[in-house]
Length: 113
Image (cartoon, rainbow, N blue to C red; front, top):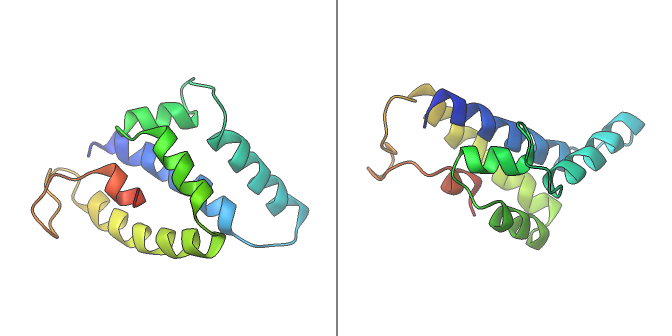
């Protein structure tokens, strides 16, 4: 995974985190709405969800379907596990293999879809 791909993956993961963070503040509620709007937008400009998914070679439709099929608590648990995994991957960006099993790294596996 290149540094640029790691950046776009982090953008996606931040949006997911915004979805699951529970806070009754109006700012948090706005971030959750904005994250949902961003994820389900059909915009394909630089920085859009579709752009980010394409940059990391992930099917945006599959990610969207995955989000729709899981609970908030399940997403929160997956994000916690993925952040640990992605953190390890970002530490060794020049290594094209997933050190846990010797297979090529897949951003889709990082998102668990």
